[in-house]
Length: 200
Image (cartoon, rainbow, N blue to C red; front, side, top):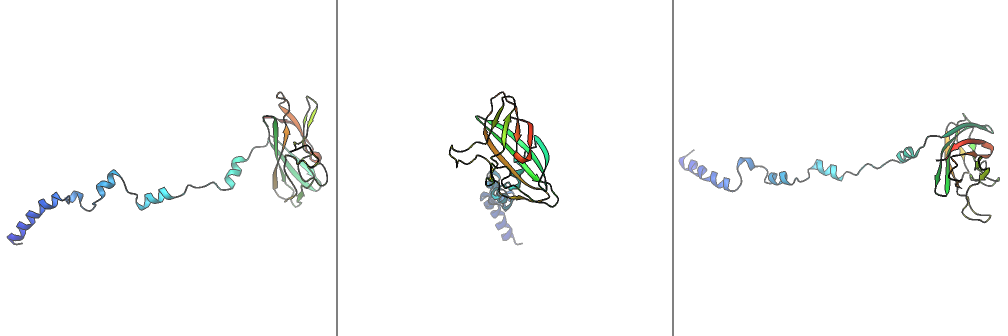
């Protein structure tokens, strides 16, 4: 290297330092800014824009599942059924009964049809009643009016439950018994009576 080239190099170093190009700052131009206010990298962008996992349809079903407070196996026609009463809950002036019917038969489907209705063309659970043995009262399913065509506040059922575990959850709403009544009998027509079902 000639003396002239060495002199030119020595004069260039202070000039570069004054421009912010010292080795500690080289290569980033924006690294200092990044340290104080990080710009999203490809990885952070993926984390911030990735949608939150939504519950599957199965998850709410599992969350809503309730243990049976009363359970019984019933023989009806050629089918074997398991009936699980899952809740009898007081809410203000009404009581809601929920239960699940499961067909445990090996090879016979069970037609719900009008088995829980008040007549042969009533494909609802309107015949399911609550019996207050202490006060000698029977509570029928509530209806949305007073006329002959007033619909019951209850499940519509007109289907078959498959053998080997086909199931359906059902419900019915009633006027609430007196506050001091803590248990009632649930009458399910041909499926029998469930005694001393706790009223929560």
